[in-house]
Length: 419
Image (cartoon, rainbow, N blue to C red; front, side, top):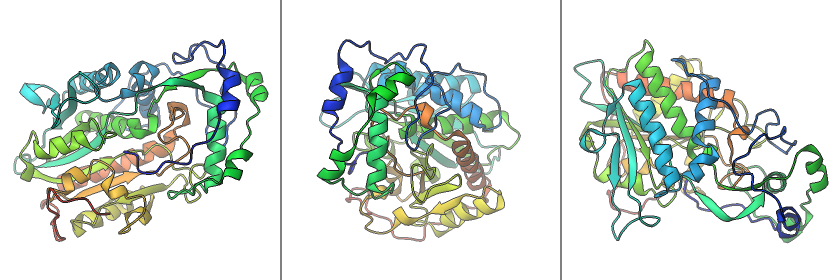
């Protein structure tokens, strides 16, 4: 998710300077001991995980396998226009090819090259969206599309490594002090000064490790790998979509929604054939340790009724009828909400063209836009529960005889977004 207002920075220079001298970097994280206990995070998951074959069912184990691959240090933070992003995009494309999805990028490929007015992004490499289709099973509906999106990019790397475990503990303390809220309070100077990390205690549990990679496990590795799980379920399972399902992994979201804006202006299917867009960004957390209002059933919803009342109704009815039992939170969908989430992720690049949208995420947390956003801190049962719900919602939209009616005002596609 693109940055709007991050938490106040925690001054760790004194703490971390003692950790930085004469230490090997841990960006490869080889043979790690068990992680130390940290505030608000899992203590039972490894830093590395051997991949396992995935299956038709959408499971926590499958999502874990995929996310540990996609948010691995070898992807170098998936910065737009970097070798790491290219490696991550190739992983997605290889999986799409293996599963048999139809390419929907340029020239029969899975890649849509994105051109940016005024020049290249992040230097010199071409940048790409990844696009594929699960063809619809109903001949009367197959020419229409339900779009499902996430962003594959993240923040790349920092030239100034930090000691991961000390940073993690300090960030968790700062997050608790800020209120564990989707509208976090700024820390006072006194609160920042009060943050202490016992480095010696951490080092008794494990060797110190320097970290320079923004892995982006939740932002938005979680959404990206949910799309792959849904694609696998649709291709190999028994329930097939009536309409076609358009999968788009956008690039350059972190740079200002550039990849989705380009796709909205240059869609690889007719724009008026897209009946709705479902966007996922940061759906792997949301426990009560992350948010005071969080829990195993928490899911935030934005934009579901801004263009189509019917789409908003389906968001709720599928949750009930499918027995998903999710607690849908609309607080951040409020007009004028200070976080401006409606304008901060890729769904708006579709909404501005009059396509009904809904955006799902599990809220902010201490590791948002930090080096500590890694796969071992994801809540995989919660993540799988949400991904199964998303699959059900997309299939329900795809099976419905009529497309969701647009019954709300449509913005000008070139107007400034208003929350």
